[in-house]
Length: 282
Image 1: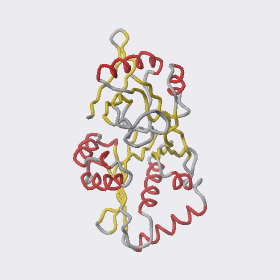
Image 2 (image 1 turned 45 degrees about the vertical axis):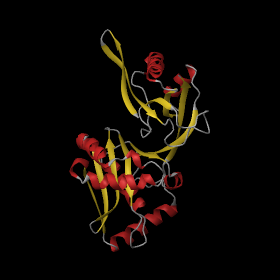
Image 3 (image 1 turned 30 degrees about the vertical axis):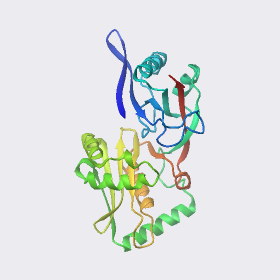
Image 4 (image 1 turned 180 degrees about the horizontal axis):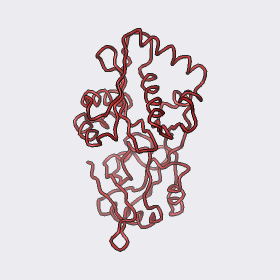
C-alpha cells in the first residue's frame, strides 16, 4: 500500500511551509533501518518524501515543530507505526531541528556531489588512474561504435530508458522504483527540467540517465546500464562522464551524483555527504 499526502502550514491563509509525505507498508524498502531502529522493515511508516528522494528538506523550516506535530497526528490517524524523515543531510539545519524535537538521527547512507564552481573540467579532482581509464574507455568505445545523445527527456524513448533503469535497480532489489509506464509519464510531465543522456552501441541502448535541473544543481537522478558490451569499456563510466560534462556545459554549480557506488564516485572526485533517518514511534 502506498498513499501520499501533503502538509501545508498557513499563516493568515498564506502557505509558509510544505511537506510531501508517503505512507508505505514496508517501512524499510532499502534495508537500511533494521540495524539502527527496532524494526523488521515490514511495518507501516509515514515518511517524508519517498525513499528515492535523497534530499529531504523542509521549505519553511521555522515551522518544523508544527509540521512534526501534524505528522504525528496523521500517522496515528492512518495507522502508521513510525513517522519521520529519511535521507536528511547530516550537515543540515533540518537534522539539528529534528534532534531538538526529540528525534534520533541515525546514519543510513551517503550521497555524493561535486562542486563545479571554478573547475576547468569536472575531472580535475579524479585520481590519475580514473582519468587514464576514462581516456582509454572512450577510445575503445569509439572504436566499438558507441555514440551518445543528450536532449530533453520527454523527446526520448522513456519506456526503453525506464526498462533499463528497472533492470539495473533490480540487481539491488529496488526494481519496483521504476515502473516503466509511470516513469515515462512522470518524466514527460517535467518538460525541459529533465534531460535524457543516452549511450548507445550502434543502436542498442547500453546506458542511460535521466537528469533533473533546478537552475543551480544538476541531479543524476536515475540511470540504467547494460554491461554486456563489446570493446572492453565501462558504459557506466561513459555515462558519468557525459553527465558531468553536461553539468559544466550548462553552467551548474553542483553535480548531485546520487547515492551508492562510493568507490567509483570518490575515485572520480565526488565528495561524500552522510544521510540520516530521523524516526519516532507514532
